[in-house]
Length: 214
Image (cartoon, rainbow, N blue to C red):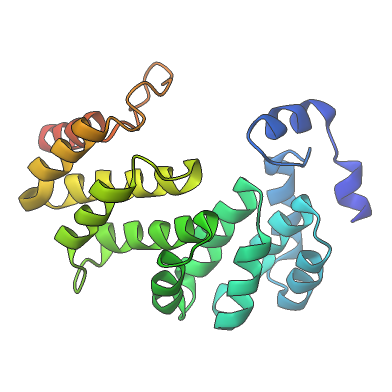
């Protein structure tokens, strides 16, 4: 914790806080510490229990993802209220854990929109990599009915799922684009030059074009 505190950078904190993350540690330096420590599951648990955002990010980097129990991950996800910790936990830990599918189903139906967004992130992973058994038409039904009025984090996760359905599954592409056009979610989102817009119709069309050109 002392080492992490010594890495505190006010400028980094200012940038991170604009994105909802309350830490000032450069992530490159954090990864260097993790590389030195290597995998240490008990240390990861101790770091997580501090509640400190930088410590929790380091915990994610040095933990053993498959070693967590289902209920342990459920508690951790509900404690992970800053965007970076939430995203890293889902992508670097939960996706690699044997309880991922069970948690996907439970979280997707959770009344807490931040928890539900984690369920949608796991669903998007399955849409892209292991769609067998998913009812894609039913997912589109839910997105069509709920995405426009969903809170920001949940809306973003649903939009990612919509785009992936359109990109990966040609038989659902026209409907995915139509839903995106009618709901117009993230249509005016500021996008840096050279980056693809998160607006689903644009995103789908661009990714399909790139694959066809490659």
